[in-house]
Length: 286
Ligand SMILES: Cc1cc2nc3c(=O)[nH]c(=O)nc-3n(C[C@H](O)[C@H](O)[C@H](O)COP(=O)(O)OP(=O)(O)OC[C@H]3O[C@@H](n4cnc5c(N)ncnc54)[C@H](O)[C@@H]3O)c2cc1C
Image (cartoon, rainbow, N blue to C red):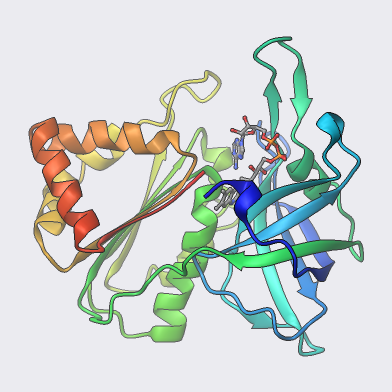
């Protein structure tokens, strides 16, 4: 769906409770975890959904408001005052204009990353489908997130082990980033997934770029192929569900790696079509 097509009529005020940089100062990427309190109790959301953020204008190109989406990074919670609390993880982005070659700061991500505690913003949503949890607790889950695509999985895994509980299927999380410093939810200073390492069914793996200071893509092939026996076994099992989240370019990269692991592009295309048709393939890509 195009951004213009989202319903933005109903708006909620959200106040910043905290904004913390969660990538180390020496990391190239600045990612901030921002927690908001929504001023109305009827703002319901679930892991897998995103909220809309409206950055007030005027902006260049004449639009009054700039609208972007952010995945919720935690399960629903209430503030002390009983209002909904939302956590998002935002990467400060800039981009190079194809024509002028100039570097521009992304409007929404910079607006969010510059907010201070107590500031108020206007949000909409929530949008999108919640990540569906298979009814059968023996189902296997393969979760692949890159960059800020890890945010919805932080919420989803918490939901599976804390809210649902007693999960018996295998849960395998593959977390890609350009460098160890950018594994912001899984590093030496902060590892939110450590809460689940004592669960017998949970394992998490990191994928990195081979040369972090270059623009090389994340080496998904090393990370996935090392575990290809288990992954292929899981994909052969009709009780396995795959979830992808992050920037769109991981789709092509993963297609290449899965085709290699499974033996041919055609076999992978068939397998993926089966997963999609069976509702066992979920993408949250942007
Ligand atoms: C369903 C959905 C969920 C999203 N969830 C998140 C989230 O949890 N956290 C988050 O930071 N962003 C998320 N995004 C991206 C977000 O909506 C914005 O596109 C992003 O913050 C850039 O907006 P901007 O206005 O700052 O810059 P824009 O002018 O819109 O974009 C600037 C450039 O940055 C690139 N870019 C956009 N997002 C990222 C990113 N996350 N990492 C690296 N490069 C990027 C774009 O390709 C573009 O070239 C999500 C997008 C969608 C559609």
